[in-house]
Every structure is written in structure tokens, then in C-alpha cells.
Image (cartoon, rainbow, N blue to C red; front, side, top):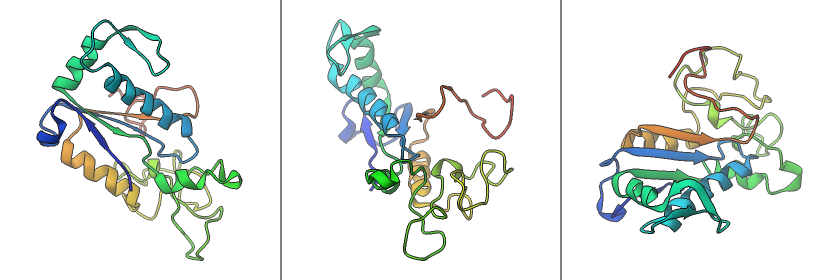
Length: 196
């Protein structure tokens, strides 16, 4: 299962998407454990400071410079903050075996041999329908590649689940954390120099 947590005032009584919504997501790439930890700490920041006053406190118990607990409470009261800490749970689980620690993709058995090997898996981050198969620069058709995009747009269960939530809630923004490179990337990744 892929878990999505909704954080908003009276969450159990509010229809999904009834407030402006933001999605914080991570671990589309199985090996990027720290991205999930980043999202977990962001989630805790909102939960631990809700209804409090003064400077917000981080998970380490230290003040968070420039962030007030009152501001965080206001965001929770007036927005929907959604968290998917692990968007690729099967691949993530697979990486806990030391032999598979650097596995990036999901666990699609591409060749149907009943085993997960180097020719298997799909990169969930390259499987979204927008400009799928646009070129071979950022993704490709080689099943052994870490950026293999799959057999078709949204062919993977992880992508379908993600899109199902996106279509139900209609997020204004998605902050998708990764741990590779020191970059802040903006849409649209399929085209150079297009400003979002």
C-alpha cells in the first residue's frame, strides 16, 4: 500500500480537496531514503507545532529560525497538506537488502522470469503521462536503464495511485523530494528554459 496522509483542521470531516491543497511526496526512487525522512520531518513540523505559539520547534527540539508555530497552525487550519512519505514502497522495501541498496526503480518484472534483476523495474518518476516518450534524453526504452520509463504512460501501479490522488484532490503544488544532486527543479522538465 501507498499511504497518503491529509493534515488539515477537522480532516476527518472535510471532503478531500475542499481547501487549497499541497502534496509533499518522496521516495519515488527506492534508494532515496533521506527524501522520505525529509517529508517525515516536514509532517512532524506541522503536527508538533499545531496550536502552539512562539517560534516553531523542529524534530530535534531546536527552534526553527523564521518559522512561527502560529503560522504553521494557520496553514493547517486553512489548507490541506498531504504527505506521501514513500511513493514506491515495493522498491523501497527491496533496498533494505544490502545487495539491493542502490536499487532505484519499482519491482516490475519486465521479462516475466519471476526474479528481479538488472533488466527489471520501471522508474516511477519517468512514468507519468505528461510528455511520456517525448525523447530519450531524460528517460529511455532500455529496460536495464535506471530511467526506463515503462511500456506506456502511467503503466505502473505506483503512478496510477499517485495520479488517482492528484485527480481527486487537485493540488495547487507538489513538492517531490529526491536526494540526488543539489538541484531545485521546476516544471517543466521535458523542455529546457520553460518557466513554470
